Structures are given as structure tokens and as C-alpha cells.
Length: 91
Image (tube, rainbow, N blue to C red):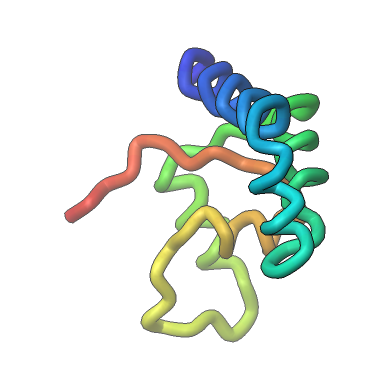
């Protein structure tokens, strides 16, 4: 996971360093926080959760949607943190 995290940080830095015009376009028309979020990826250390741990977090949510599909965005929303989910069980 350290290699994957380092690669994600490298890609985020590369995009900020080499795609400034594209980032300005995205900031203006789609998401004005995209550059800040990439910078946060570069500087922060995300929490690592297994898929099972993420599911357990979702099970503790009051009134969960029975058909909820686990995504990292849902868990990030619940934890208000940057996370990486690994050992995803596709079955």
C-alpha cells in the first residue's frame, strides 16, 4: 500500500506541476477545489481501511440504505477524512 500511496502522491504532484492550464479549466467550470484536493493528497497521509473495516463503519450508520454500494466517497463522507480502501472483495 505504501507504493500505491506514493504513486498517487506522485501523480497528483505531476498533474499540478504539468497541467496548470487544464487545472484552471477544471477549477473554473467543474470543481473549484480540485487543486486544493490534489495538494492535500500530496501532503496528507490517508487512513488505510480494509473493505471489511469500511463495511463495518457503514453498518453503524443510523438508517443505512439497504442497497448502499460501498465506495470510498461514502466512507470519506462519513469519516470526513482521506482514506484508501484496500482488499476490496468484488464478489
